[in-house]
Figure 1 (spheres, rainbow, N blue to C red):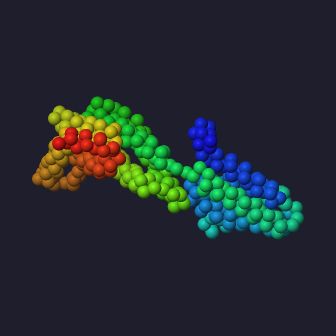
Figure 2: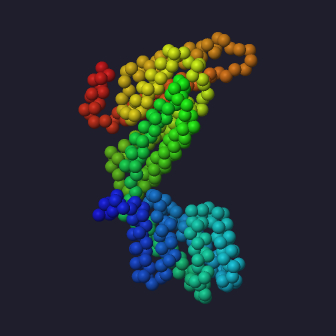
Figure 3: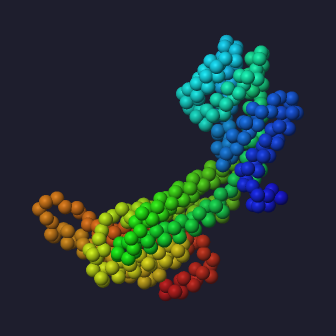
Length: 358
């Protein structure tokens, strides 16, 4: 039932927040303690991972304790004056920063200033009550994050990774057209590169979330192997993105290429683009032939620079040699990806690929 609600109406984190608030209020009513601070603690303690929920929950408890202590101490001296509010907020923030409790700064400051208007006397009792309510909220929300709809980012990581392959292929296709003079959309290319970088960082963040949460939840060997493959693929995609960035920022004029060079270059680009769109599961023999030609061309350019050095300072890599180097580097990356992605294919597809190669 929860799964259906999650997919159709709310996200898992929203559902867990609602459950945490509901259970927190019940617990507070059971122990006859105020609910508002417990509810605040429960809401802010729900994190993307159970690991963060536990770690930051402990930090927020100590931070809230500091805020409450400042609040009650200053209120006992200055009553409900503006001085109490200002000093409580300032001292709480500074203390949290000094004690490296940054994750709890916001909730601690809110707790400190919110306690002042509702406390008239019995400051020590109010302080202990706030500790109790905060403990209830943090404990309940941490429990909910651990056992109810535990975070699982595997599906998102796979979906994001498939999208990254296509984004990289589209970006390479656009840049290839620019390099041989068939397109003039450099600004759009830079925007697409920025988007690719952001999407890649998002996927890497969720890989980190998944790794953290597996310390607390069971997982099979198959799931672990798949996770490590995804992690390797994203690392290699990160390297491909780096080389794509170099291709985007290299300056060259289409007139520098001969007709034959343009044909070979674009053929290599098209081959790499096709392989990326097929998630690097198979590299055809023709692709290796194209790469061998570019490799020879790259070393020919280097030899020309070696034997015809000008007397003045010169760049060791011309724009043409940089472009060829980046293409060859991307080829090395997709070879690594093929060896990883090949394991994910069913045996029938592997046999078919083997027969095609032979």
